[in-house]
Amino acid sequence: MGGFIGRILDIDLTSRTYKIHSTKEEWVKLYSMMGYAIRLLYEEVRRKGMIDPLGSENTLIIVAGPLVGTYLSGSKTAFVSISPLTGYLGKSMMAGSFGTMIKRSGFDGIVLRGVSTTPVYISIVNGAVEIRSADHLWGKKTSETFKVIEEEIGVKNLKIAAIGPAGEKLCRFACIVSNEYRVAGRTGIGAVMGSKKVKAIAVYGESTIEVADKRSLSDLVRKHGEACLKSPRANALKSYGTAGGLVTYVLDGNVPIKNWSKGVFEDQDPAKIKITGQVMQQIYKSRGKSCGTEVPCVIQCHKEVYVDGTWVKHPEFETLALMGTNLLINDPGALITINRACDELGLDTISTGAVIGWAMECYERGYISKNDVGFELKWGDVDAVLNLINMIAYREGIGSILAEGVARACKNIHPNTCDFAPHVKGLEVPAHHPRRYYTIGLVYATSNIGASHLQGMTFLLERGVALLPEYGVEEPPKSLEDKVRSVVITQNLCNFLDSVGMCKFPVFGVIDFDHVAKVYSAVTGYAVDKDEVMKIGERVWYLERLLNLNLGLKVVEDRLPSRFSEEPLNEGPVRGSVCPIGDMLKLFYEYRKLDKKSGYPEPAKLKELELDTGL
Ligand code: SF4
Image (tube, rainbow, N blue to C red; front, side, top):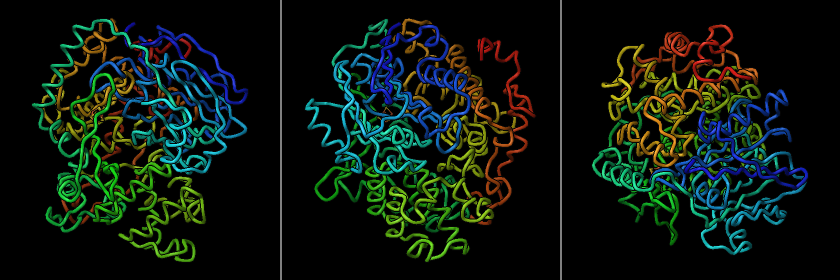
């Protein structure tokens, strides 16, 4: 099949040996590549039983789908493991060229097993694999790590994915950062890498990635590029990156404010909101960067700003919301510094912002004191936030409790604080607001990795920014039935896109899934239509669900923090609204054909999806 290399690199860190396996075509067809990694993980769980996410028995699987390196928005590399935050499936997608280099170096993916006794980094250059000592890198921040490895390997255009001190110290929401400053942010994948004592993976390759039908593909690339240029959504992303959405979302009531306890930020006055992409670009010189080495994405949503003589990453929307509106910080320079600190230390900005917001509420309500923290922890205090970020990454003082994630920390501080701890299944809640868009509440409650907005981008459908007429969603869903249906559809589609390695931004609201199906067919030579696209994504969703059930998932964990469903706000755009999660969950279970008590899918559903054999 085109787009696939046919080989997977399987490294045993305990013995410091590696093998190369053939990629199984049957699994590729059933699940595409991220789903392939989840199936591999499923087999591991079946063989080993319960797995300690930070123990030697956990496996980290990194895969690049068929579209990676072959198509304009084929940029996403999947990192899959058991999450140290949730104990269930962990996965996170990294944009940029890391996956392209894995494929150009001769592999569809890399499997990391076991644990090294001493720190190492892995060098893969044109298929040659070396496990090198990283004693001299342990403790270093990410930028320094990149510099040293780039010098040591001495190859131009090397792509590196590394952990910072937070991953080394097993902070449960540590992330993996690339030398393009793209991150696999969510579910604590960086802590898994740290537990294996792998500081970094560096890859470079020159081989060509073959596709099945080059001529059709170049026509599809051209049409997609034209669609991007015509699309208001794509153009907004091109101009300001994801940060451009902040002002709209504040006015819409679709951001966290003061740990989700307030409905108004800066009087809802656009002139007073200084942390938007638009304002930052007035203050700082900026530039856009594209994902993709072979076929660059035309949107270039990755923005950089010029600060103190250097180009640095522009914070994304999620960072601006979780660290900005959530903590009542309205200072663009401070947010650039906070963002940089998290990337250097290897911390997921979403979970970090959520944990600090919860800690600030604990402080305000007297559950933790100045003595506990070492300084005052007041809303909007930038120095306090920066201090706490460091303490979390290095597990110093109260930072060690917070590094466990909000679900564990609340039990440690005081059980009452769990009432306002924003997480689902242990994963901290990102920026989109379930009181505003009910569908996103259901996405959080039923996502197989915990609260993630990228597991069903339904807020775009509810806002009418993206519709899916090809799947019968011709207008924003209004009834609860339609809302639930739109969640199921987008969960499946997001899983498909993740599995083939395609970025979601240039899809929803830009092109339809007939086009996506044609792209998949042109790259792989495996003819699919929009219905088969849906089926692959659906199959992956149920496979994830089965994996979690095997790891002990209970139906009570399909939930939403009560703040969203029982505590209405008395001000702002979402005043009086609560997410009717109970009613939606009932409908969801019916729609997904899940048993209400056990949470297991009905056997007929599994048979329909060819998941009934041995799973
Ligand atoms: S939209 Fe942004 S993240 Fe997605 S492929 Fe393009 S540049 Fe990369």
